[in-house]
Length: 138
Image (cartoon, rainbow, N blue to C red; front, side):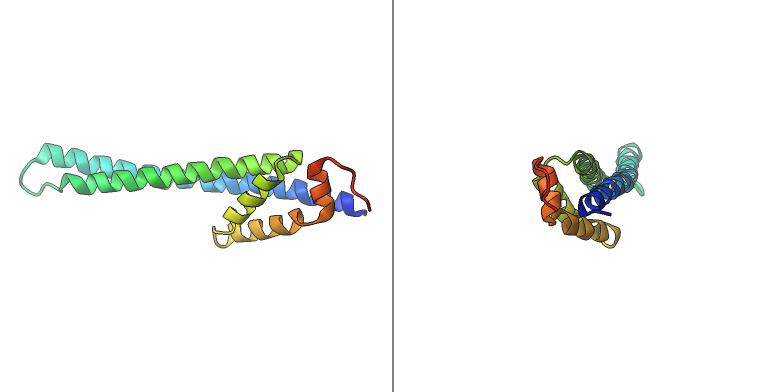
């Protein structure tokens, strides 16, 4: 098997794994949504009870804001990871793919493994040539 064929297979596999990792990252939206719903419930209870045993409304707002931030971050990382997988498959936007591989390293342990392997593959001269659209000298 030639090096170019091996690089193509590695990029294809990494692309699929980025799609999967992006989908898993999207699950973080559920956690953010749950926090937001809890916060909304606390705020609703605070406005209806008004007095005895009512939770403070600012606690609900804190939960709501934390949930929104979690959902926003998870959604952003999910979309960007899926875009990186698409770009790996199309051999476009080398720098974007490299940066997303570095960001994936922050998600221990699966994201770290995916990011490290992506960085290793992207550092090969033959893969860089594939992204530039020039034929690789083997």
